[in-house]
Length: 203
Figure 1: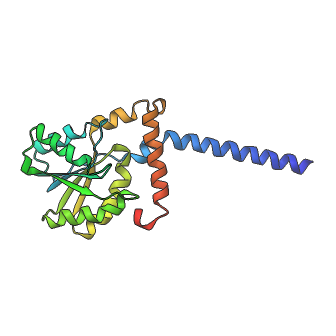
Figure 2: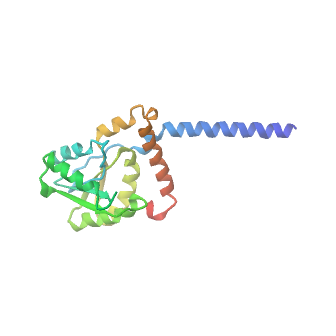
Figure 3: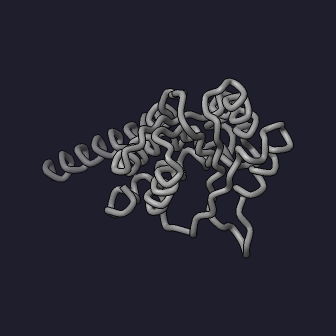
């Protein structure tokens, strides 16, 4: 009987510690997922933060006007038949004042994870003679994207930096645990990264 009580007590303590760890990890997600924005003067801006909830289009235009890069490539995968968000982002950037000749749209195939398409993007950048790229992504994807993108781009001799729209980060992290879509994005990104680590082509 005594041994059973000791075992039960240890099990309860372990469970409490596990739950406490999960709570701490949950509230630490913004710091774990979001890297400091790194804006570096580059040959090209790779714009992949394409979303109706994002202000990244305006941010990219502002970077272009500041002379951070002379060219912009809107990168996206197909979401429906012949439908690529990057095409619409390109048109939006042009409507915001970016010369059409300075904005390209790169269409990528649907892939199980972003890393699968990174060699294609890196080769595209190298083929245009660009030696440096600034990747604009979603805030919650920034830390992992920086690590994975650097590995693929360095193989092609292309230096990379990763940034995101400051307004996107501010909005996403403001009381994020109280809003469904914010919590969903944080948790989904954490789960996606965890899953990607099990597959060589995704990490």
